[in-house]
Figure (cartoon, rainbow, N blue to C red):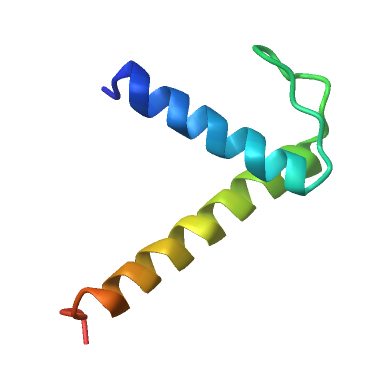
Length: 65
């Protein structure tokens, strides 16, 4: 289970992504956003995490090639 610091960082990342997509997230429950908006946030988060991982693999000696 993730610790509070990890949860806070993930929440901050989610808020950053939502803001960049012009989706208004509130603290706590966000049941008023559409499924499309929620999916856009999650999809963009995954996209950014993959890009981050790829960049770090390339700069630290890619062992996956």
